[in-house]
Structure formats: structure tokens, C-alpha cells
Image (cartoon, rainbow, N blue to C red; front, side):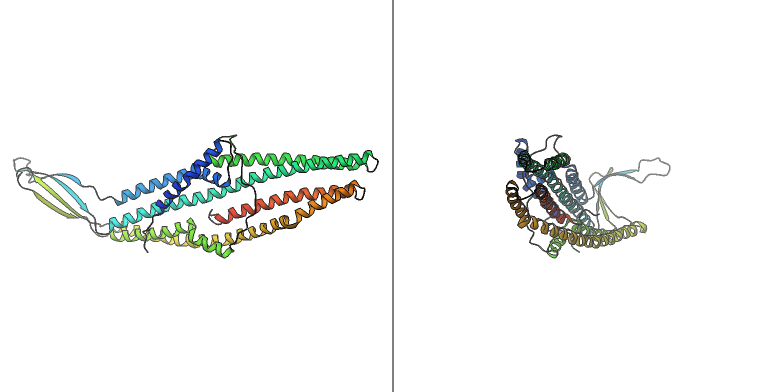
Length: 418
């Protein structure tokens, strides 16, 4: 199996960082100017400063440094030796040699070490890609959770405002002797219930903002205004199409395959470690400065346990990578099927609200309000219809939120390793 990559993943990751830099600058400027953040800008901001991403980038640097070390040739050594030392340690016939020695590795060893080092560099780049992918999904969930809380609070406040108008209509009919005071009391109880739910929605909004600011690396209380609303954008891919795309792009699958390829190279290197390396030296003797000497030698890889252990370890790593790749593939396939099904379910719910239900309830409420004013409808039925409209608005927002989260989950389904 070939391990080299024509366009190294590390270079692609560096280009990606450069590509995102302008967007990050825009995100920073927008935040500092109080202009708010879109979803894309929030993701870019998190990817540029989150500790997990920064740590993965440093690991890429370390992997590059390890690859450089693997590519290096053995250093030469300066040697000092003596010859013809008499047993009685007397006499002046001792020869002193000063020389330089160099080790020449068996052909293929350095190339395989370089290949293994590049694989480590590519693995670090893929791990960075995986961290970025998972972090982007986390930011999207936190962003939309906060947007949902904001929307819920706004819908409840709107309902309370409409209920105030309804209470006023109840009061007018009560003063005219055309309705009971119990109608006003029921409406006030409904208003109090909505006000409590509004408080809960604001609490959820605050919790969501705190989580989002943490992911974005912002200071406490520095929550920007969120500009991307909850909206429905249909997905035109089937579950099988999403799965095929994931199999060609998911970093976890690439990592498992690359680990297997690296283990294969390590196994080959272990086999070459049985072969001796050549040493050569050039010496200058102390008594004959006009002459010189040479020396040649071979290393003796006599430790069978060493190279057999290296081959066994590499073989185990390769088998583990194969098992991992199979497990990741099956996990991703299962998670994508579930996520795609949840997405389609949320899509159906959104369509129910957006195509007919909300509009029908709003129209019916307007008509019923006129009927009530002319005494053709009782207050209890009107209040119940009003309550249905409030719940429909809230359920519509929740359906949009579940759809947006399902889209984010589909992008990383099975990638979290759980």
C-alpha cells in the first residue's frame, strides 16, 4: 500500500486556515462593533480560538518536527584512537589517530522512516480536521439553542400582548353585562402562565448565551447579537448519498486507513532493521602526518527480539486499524441512518406548521374574535383557540430547531466515537 499523498493533508489544512482567516477577521470586527454574528461567523470564530483546535494545531507542529527528525541522516562522529600500546605501558611506539566516522544506513531505512513521519504528520492534520468538524457541530447546536430560546421568549411576549387585547375585550363585554367575570379571571390565569414560561425562556436564553460565549472564546457578558434565524432549508440528499459522501470525506475513516498504512511501513522497516548498516571513517595518524587511513565496519543487529518485537507491534497496530476502520464505517452508517430519519421527521413537522396549520389558526382566531365581539362565540372557546395558536407558534419554533440540530448532527454522525 502506498503511503505517500500527492497533496499532503497538512498543506491542505494550512490552506484551509488561510482561507478562513478573512472570515475570522470579519467575525471579530462584527463582534467588536456590536453588529452581531451570523452562524458561519460564529463557527469561524470558535475554530480560530478554541483550546481543542489550538492544541490540535500544536500537535501538527510536533508531528512536522518528528517528520523532520525522521528524515535526518545519522550524524557523523569524531573519533580518537591509539594503536601499538605496549603491555608494559612504556616505550614510544604508540600511534594516535584522529578521525571522522559516518554511518550509512541500509538502503530503504531512511525512506521508510520518512514515510512513517509523513504519515504521522498527515494523521495530526486529520485529527485537526476531526476536532474542527466536531467543534463546528457543537457551535451550531449552542447557537440554535440560544436562537430558539430568544424566539420562544419573543413568541411568548407576543402572545401576552395579544392576550392583553383579549382581556380588554372581555372587560368591555363584562361591563356591558354580556359576559361573566370568570372569563377575565381565566384570561388572567393564562397570562400569568405565559409570563412564567417567558421567564423560563429567558433563563434558557441566558444559559445558551453562556455556553455559546464559552465555545467562541468570548469574555463573560460579551455575547454578540445572533443574526441567523431558525429557518427551513430542505436537504436534497438521500441517506445513501449522505453515507457515500461521508465514506469519502470523514476524517475518522481516513485516520484508520492511514494508521494501517503507517503500520505496514513500520513492519517493513522492522524487517530492514535486520540488515547491517555500513560505517566508514577517515583517520590522520599522529606519526605520519602526510599519510591518512580509512576504516570500514558493519553494525551487527544480533538482537532478534528487537526486530521481531517491532514487526509484531506493527502487525498488531495494522490489525487494530483495520478493526477500527470497520467499526467506524458501521457506526457512521448506523448514525447517518438515524440522523437522516430524524431530519426527515423534523422536516415533516416543519412543513405541517408552515404550509397550513399556523395560517389556519391565525385566520380562525381573527374570525372568532369578531364573532365574540358580536356575541356569536363564547369566551372559553376563544381563549382555547388563542391558547392553541400560542402552542402552535412554540411548536413551530421547536420543529425548526430540531431540524437545524438534525442537520448539524448529520454532518458529524458517528464521528464522535460514542
